[in-house]
Length: 256
Image 1 (tube, helix red, strand yellow):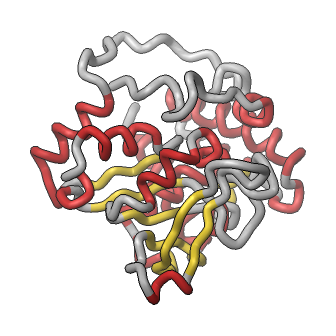
Image 2 (cartoon, rainbow, N blue to C red):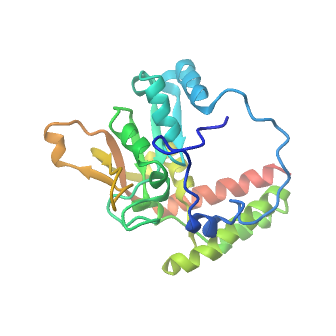
């Protein structure tokens, strides 16, 4: 399902050079894979989320690993989403660490800060898995070699894609000795929240100025506002990394 093709207050999404550098010009490490044969659904991504919420209610969990644009548009079109959804887990933001596209902003939030602000302040149950914890979840070439050793097409292609990411990542964060499992950590948090430490707080997002895209949590606001987001501030990184890498390895084996 196609989501919105531009940020809420702009007519586009920014193509940042750092993103093209880390993920390749084609978004998957310059690896060539066959084009999908399945056609794109005619329903919009926004309407699909609304229909799914109406169908599944509290059983529905949404994991957002990009800009929060679609969720903000869902809230504008269907305000009951905030009360009917079970949980939203996002990969985005940076509370106690610097951003990765500016000193303040993380990439996903930076693409549409207004959408993040709308989501945070809406009353929707949100868990934020930001750079505070995702930078602690490493993946290295020994992990991807296990995928390649499955001798499956999908395992080898995944390994090629992530190897590109790991090698480029060394340029940006050489002290990590590998890449970081950003989006997969958000998926893991949805399945194993017990591996994370959360701090409930009143969270918002800067939408203008040099600190645009900065996620700001204020504990002092709790005197007059309820916590609106559970922010991950610590992680059992070894468990998360092992779970993600081994789950993919087993999936690749089953794809034979």
